Image 1 (cartoon, one colour):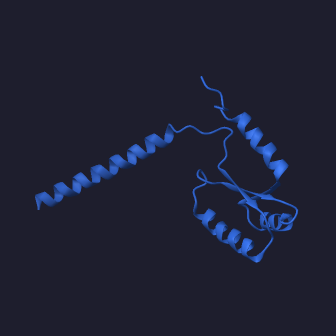
Image 2 (spheres, one colour):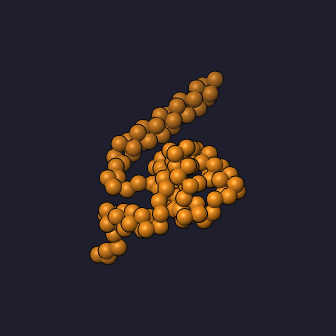
Image 3 (cartoon, helix red, strand yellow):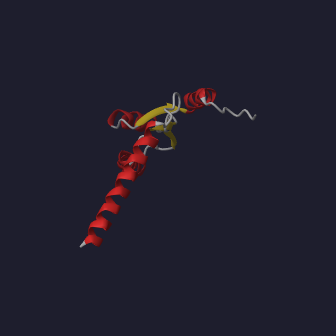
Length: 120
């Protein structure tokens, strides 16, 4: 009986220690000022299979932690512009951009990054 109590106490101490470590390590975590978790996905065509894939992808994004992936930027061309805009209206995880807009956005994100290609 004493052995069971000892095992229970050790397990509770272990769980308590793990919780304390998780709380203390989370408090000292840096908050990123300018970084965003996003992905870029080119959409080359407006077809039923492309729509089905993007809707399935939406369900996968919903399960992800926002620190892993917050937004998917759909890069459209003239053929897929309508599909991308429609999906961006239906689902909050999507934004749509053209290729020149995407290039400008990436350039601005690179300028904001603390290690923007500089070696030291």
